[in-house]
Length: 355
Image 1 (cartoon, rainbow, N blue to C red):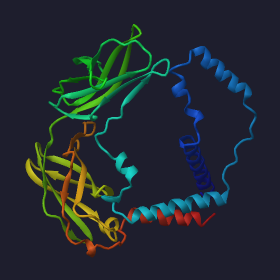
Image 2: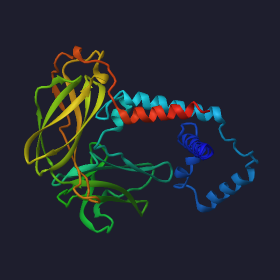
Image 3: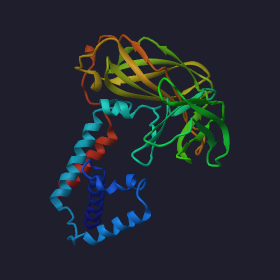
Image 4: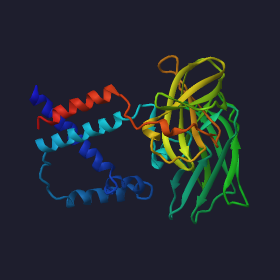
């Protein structure tokens, strides 16, 4: 059994190290093909690939980590589990980078490289639209290319790719962008957005995805917050269109500083109901908070009743909800009890001690 365990840990370590290298900021060459593929011809790509293989020197086989390295890795993971165990899963600290990454309805502009350093970019105000909302589209084309005065935008069903709506994007004299909108009154599903331009007399298509969601209900504000069991409890009023199980997430801010990511799940009936978000003392105790606090980026999910059904999404107001909390001096930086993480940490420490 110890021999099998050592082999398993060695394999995991090797995979982790290799993955970390490929994702590191210093490793720029392994993903260069992604940009080169848009500008080089197949012959150029083949020539460069062949030259690279010919110039590649023989390298010795990589050495697997020794016992000390495996022990160090296990001890590091155990420490991480211990750190995570301080916070309950429904109230975790939030950095500015994490706050940006957790935005639930952000559309990342899709850019298509063109010749002569040109670019064809399409952007939307968000990724998920509620049924009936207009889908506003903005496109830009930069570079020395000759472009037609208008672009064509088409909304297609997936995976059939049947067209359900089309519109024309016209050049704005004020901004220099192409702008237009599509009717978003389609059935809730994922769709492809195809924006086609005539560039230097040839059609060029920029393809992205979006979703149309059903109307889940309305956020109606907050009840008065209060302290309970080393938690700041923030009651959120939500009026659901349909009964079912829902999951609510939001980010707690003090001024412009993110504090915590908050989560809650519960069954809701139709009509107004209360969902309690809780900020644990470990994320608030000792902080110099500015009143009022703010809940931002509220996202509610209607969880599927059956496996395979879609999860539907709804979002709170852009400005969020501000509130004045009670005196937070009673909150304590006492770690939450997370038995699963503690058990894993103890097991990993036991394994680390064997090396």
